[in-house]
Amino acid sequence: MRAMGTADSFIRACWLSWLAVQTADRAEVVTALGLTDVRETSWAEGVALIDELAHDEEEPFSTVVVAPPLQG
Image (cartoon, rainbow, N blue to C red):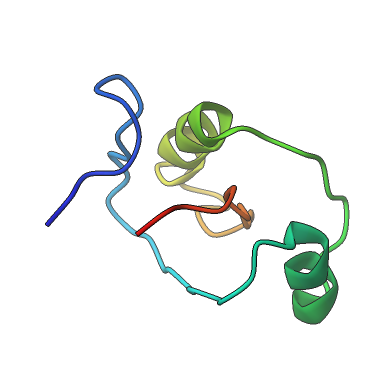
């Protein structure tokens, strides 16, 4: 298994769901999933956001992060 990100950007959230798609076009993913209130984020920003939201007792599953394309 290969870790994604740098040593300071590993995802540490307890509850995650992943959806892998075969495209580098994030706008296409956003449209296909019908996502709203979209803003661009880097891998590191997404990791920090997921880590924070995963432990939110009121809305732990309130956000979707469409990560930049990964090689592998």
